[in-house]
Image 1 (cartoon, rainbow, N blue to C red):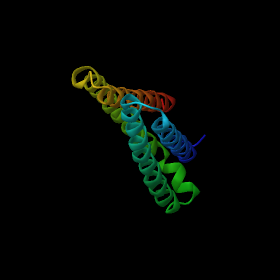
Image 2 (image 1 turned 90 degrees about the vertical axis):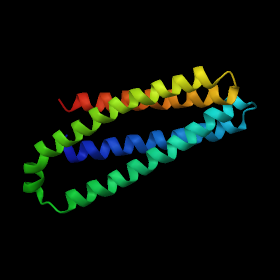
Image 3 (image 1 turned 60 degrees about the horizontal axis):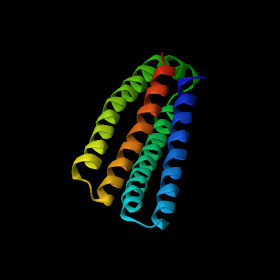
Image 4 (image 1 turned 180 degrees about the horizontal axis):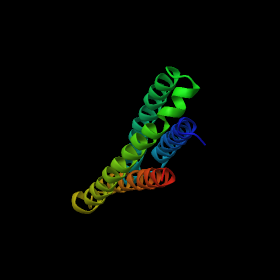
Length: 141
């Protein structure tokens, strides 16, 4: 798979996760209790952020790829691969901080159920993104 197709695949996967997060957040809003409301807000918020990242990433990819013919795309692949790998590894580092921040919110701002749910929601989203970024970055080796 060339880097252009790979980037498109990553964008589609992130879009899927974004919509799944929004849907799970909306469903969580239906559950009773502050814990679920805190988690729901995180899932919905992160879902929209990830949707925006995927959307603008897709537009940027189409713009870059659209300027190149097939020969130029082939020549640009090594640099595109390095750039994507650097972005994914950088994101993976930030994802660890999201997880730590979520755990801190759940642990230290609690025992209020809303804040525990908020922290766990952040932790879950950060964990998914760490796995997502790490797996895709490893694929680029």
